[in-house]
Image (cartoon, rainbow, N blue to C red):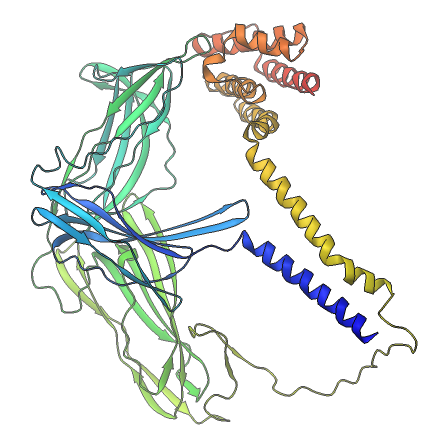
Length: 597
């Protein structure tokens, strides 16, 4: 019997271990550290970006040696986390924008990073700097595949214009400026295909989230011509160095004059490249000045001014105001040596609007005094450049006196540390576990686990769980590969979404109502029948629906709705009400779904 138990126990342990290993294979990712540049070779008068990336890990990157180059901006950080088929992939990147000082061949790296206590070395980069400059070196072309059946045209005739407009022409280093991307069009129908975003080299940047591209009601006159105007996006920029900083021009591609009977023309337009004059900050900077520009207030407070030894004390530093708040770093507070300091918890409440950044930023320190006595936390000084007075100002918090009395217990009584970073702690309410007076649960004599229902559940559950896991994994893999099938399943749901939007426009005038109806049917046919844009004409739609054995009267009703919407987009109609058109559209989609099966 004893040998049988050992065999059963080994089998269960082996099954569970195999499940854990197989389940964890798809989630395990190798940690890597790499370096890359966006241009090579590079012109002497040009600049480029050096990006250091940690994949599937977090750590500290040692500051790179860039003594042979001029650092224009950086480092700027970015984070990317993706889940694909159950796999988590993360990357943390630090980007430096730099320019060469002289021509020649240079070696960047290798660079070093410490990840989870382990040292990682990146690859080397052989960089060539030549004298031709950015006009002929380092050019990178970008493009996208053109839709079949469309023609390519240039916007040189001025029918499509894109402008980058700055709300200020001259600012100080660290002062915010608003960049607005405006689109002017003389085309009646326009659909954006490609819209580049500048690199904003030399700036800290953040796009305003509430900007929604829409056409203005008023018509704008440019050189005697009438244009429709739309605001595409707004970006807040904060220059990081002085001089004339140029915002690179961008490219915009749009499909114009496309309709049900016309495949349209693909038109390209290029924006202007505005130059911002960035003035250096005046001389006479205070010793503790770190680059803050704006108007700020500084406060510091403690949770208590009287405390026992080994008890927890919170010390909060808060800075608020309007300016480059996100670029303000943690303060160096000279805490008393008898206070044990924990890493602060940083919180931000910062809004970015057309005027720049405003809000507050807090650092919450956890302190534990170890010895009794009277202590003083000195005042904190903070210097910034005030834009209104064009002068440096220094503000400071009030000093805080703390009286520490002798507490009960030793130096660590009542405190438990739950991580090595010392960011959280827990004070126990009770340190005595009392005797349990409840009646114990006894097992009747003669009843054993072997042969019972619980025994068989425990015996077969690992294998059953493993089979379920394999089944689910294969279903997920098959579903992720069937792109066409997913589009077909979502076709009706997507069309109903457009119809709900059109119902909200019943009481409003304009052609947007018919655009929604047209988009619902147009997208439904494309996704449900897996048809390309070049195939969406009446003849091919009829042929495709006939091959799917759709009834002729249903096909005729569908074509009628399409023609009604197409005509209403360009000329008013009065024989069909909007409510009837929505009901007719929903009805024809339901009929197609029933007949396709």
